Each structure stands twice: as structure tokens, then as C-alpha cells.
Amino acid sequence: MSRREFLKSSSIAVSSLVGASSVIPEAAYASSIPAASTYADKANAISEKLFADDGLAIPIATKPTVSPLAKGLDRTLVLGGGGEYYIAWYCGFFHGLLEAGLDMAQLPGMVVGTSAGSYMGSSLLSGHFTRLRNEMDFFGEFPKIFAKLAPVTSPNISQKRAMEINMAATDGSIETRQILGRAALAANNHLNGPRVEALAALLTGDSKTDWPTPRMYTTGIDCYTGERLVVSQASAKRNNIALAHAVAASSSLPGIVGPTLIGQRYCMDGGMCSNPAHVDLVAGSKRALVISLTDGVTGPILTKIPHPMAQNIADVRATGTKVKWIVAGAPSGISLTDPREIAPAIKAGYERAKKEADEIKSFWM
View 1 (cartoon, rainbow, N blue to C red):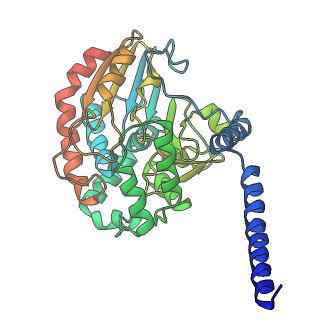
View 2: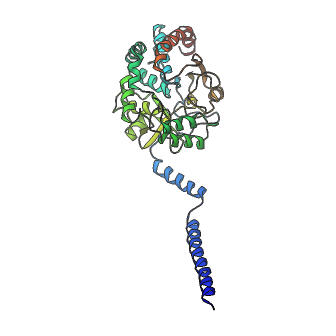
View 3: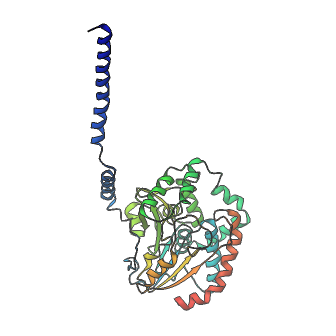
């Protein structure tokens, strides 16, 4: 064999060996990785096992189902979400009802609050409504001060990602909530962690260490699992969750606020699902007053997840619960998180209370 032939045959052999050595280990490594679905199943099983005893996750009912939380109760109250605008609207509305002789802190046996509704519900039941009403009056006069407490600055890239993913949703499935939750967790929000809880405690006057009322229930969505989380006095004590902290978690809007840790679960706004006011939780009570910002079809929104509110209400009625549903509404084109909308929202809520007071009395008294 000539020197040239020897070198040629040697190079071919070396190439074959190198090629084989690069393929065989890679194939062996690939075969050691479980299929994606198998891995997901294992991850879900691990998560379910670890969190099985915290008592926070309650599946959202997808058909008429009596809620064990509300069964046997007479009057229940559901307060949906809607940003700073809706907190202010609630302040005007419940002030107007109080003037009309309806003390909404005393009437309901159960209050389910989501986002803005968790602020109002906790203030009502903890005896701090007047405080919240006065504070919102003040911030209505001086919105720049509120803007400093809850800054909504020009969003960074991670915030834009969460916001745009939120506004790209087309359904409210668990998978959609998990994707949105991942984006929420990865957003570098300026209003985060203890600062959110401090704001909630300031506005509501609620304890940062206690859950003072057994009638209050807050809602949120687990960012990792996509599950609906419901915090009651019992589950709060089990997981060392203060009411102000749960309120902060319930209002943690992806890309703007939070997420907020409750127990050992990072939580985003409770409105990030297809039952945004969580009316299924009061199914089985005798009478439920439900107040939401929109009808789920028209009006301002904080997410593109479809909100079939009419069907949610129909399912509750199908369990035998009588429902009075009030849709607050809001002027078109407004920002629900703009402090400059506080003053007109208080006025709109107060005027609406005067129109609704007699019917609420007939329904509840």
C-alpha cells in the first residue's frame, strides 16, 4: 500500500470512529430522557402529593354543582374584580346602600371576593369600610399620590410578555392558565412581594397577621398548576395566610402586580379564568347577590380569557339558588388601573346604589 493510500484509508477509519462516537452517546442520552407527557405526568403527581393537604385548591365547577361552602346559607355576596376603578366604584356603591339602610357588612353569611372585590369584601367584613371609603375619596382628589403607592410605569420587556400573553388567550383551560402563570412569574414587576401586601393592608386596614372574619373568602389562580385557589379562615390558619396577604394575591394582575406567595403557592389575579367572579362557590345558598364589572361580553377587560358570566350565573341558578346579578359597567375607553378614574368611579357607584337599593331590599330583606 502506498503512503497516499495508507493515509486515505486511515482518515476514513478515523472519520467513521468519530462519527460513531458522536452518535452513539447522543442516542443513549436521548433514550434516557422520558417522553414529555410522561415527565409532565410525573411532575403533576409530585406537585399534587406535596400540596394535597394545604386545602387551598378547589376545582372550578363546570356544571351546576352545590358548593359545600355555601350549602344551607341564606344570603351570599359575590364581588368581582376590575382594578382601581372598581375598588372606587364599590366604595361609592356600598356608601350609597348604607345611606339607603342596607348595611352590607351585616347581611351576607358569606362573601366571595376576587381582585377589587377582595379589597371591598375584606374591608366590609373587617369593619374598615369607612376607612377605605375615605381613603379612596382622598386618592380621588389626589390621584398622583395613589400612583406613587401603586406605580403603573412603562412596562419592561418581561412585563410586556406577560401582558401580551394575557391578551392573546383564547380559552380558560388549565393549560392556558399555566402558560399565563409562567409569564406572570417571569415578569419583573415594580409592584411586587411585600409592597403589594403593604398596599392592601393600608387600603383595607386588615391585619397582616390574622384572618379576622370567617365569612370572607378570597380567590386566586396558582401560577404553576393553574388551579383555582380559595382562601377561607380555616385554610388561612392552616397555611399562615393573613387576610391582607390574600387580598394582595387575589389582585396580582400578570405583568403589573405580583405574583404573590400565599402559603407555598405563587398566585395571580383570580380573574384569570373562565369563571372570573367564582360564582360557583355560592351555589346552593338560598339567595346570592352577584356584582360584576361587566357581563363578560361588553365593557373594559383585564384579560382576553373568555368570561361566560351569563352561563356561570345560570349554573348557580340551576342548583336552586336565587340570583340577583348587577353589572356595574364602565365608560368605554377608560383604563381600569388609572388613578385618575377614582373620583368618577366613586360617583358612578354612588349613583348606581340609589337605583338598585330598593330591589336589593326586596331581594334580601
